Length: 195
Length: 186
Image 1 (cartoon, rainbow over the protein chains, first blue to last red):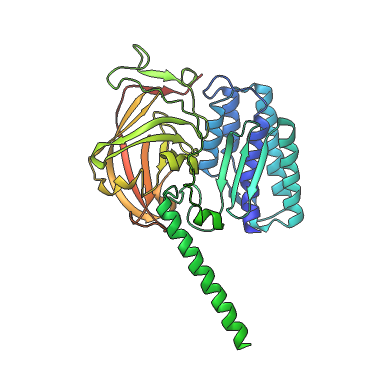
Image 2: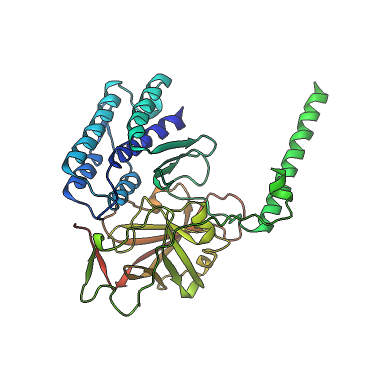
């Protein structure tokens, strides 16, 4: 549940970025309309009396994306309206943390995000095994990415312990997996014998 | 799973990526008579693009620089976290690389050494100010909200560790010189 809630909080921003992606890529730089969106992302949402803000790493991703597109005032206003709608929904359900979302509330947010993504041809994906969240355009280009895995390798610091492009490392890893598997089978059998 | 470990053929982890890096001469400005360049005049990298190279001669590092730090980037060079900023943008630049390949040389990193980042729009020199070992989830290791240009390189620690490790070696650097700065206005 905790992971789902974290995913949703990032997905909200991803959804905003996705809605924003209706414009064609053109001039880089931040224009006045895009700055209005960034300013809105810097505002807080009040959850159970406590103000929460979007992590700088997510806002930077939005800014980097805005540097590849060009927005009109109308588009910016629509995006800002979407942000305010999401904030209003979160505030209206009275949760203290995103982890407090019920399954139904989580589903509602997912539906909102998917509705926003569908018309612009973007895809939000979440890999439960790794905790990775990403949104890509029709060309497969990543627009937003985050990772909420529980171990080393979380955003923004990645796991850089080994490049598994090295065959020798793969062999070592393979042996390791076999040993662990063998140990698991042994323990299972031992417990069965004890029963 | 079995085929991964017992295949006779070498696995190919080097998927294709887009390369937008065209080196500029280190001694000349990429745009004549300009101290700054507008964002609209450069090709802003997309996720997964190779957009430059990173060189630390004292550490024997000379590697491709990617925008984004996914597996393809880290298997072919080092990756700039897309939640940080590109060189010349005036914010925090966060770059990671594997400890057994492209960033293995960070074990030689010392205060005062120079780092060169070359991109298609300009070249940027930084000076190492500190080297620290911290946990991967230590938020004090970086400030992605900083409005002052600073460079942070990191890799897993210890340097000979092949598996998962919670420690990271962080190398901090300040801007030294550049031949062009980015003008963010349109």
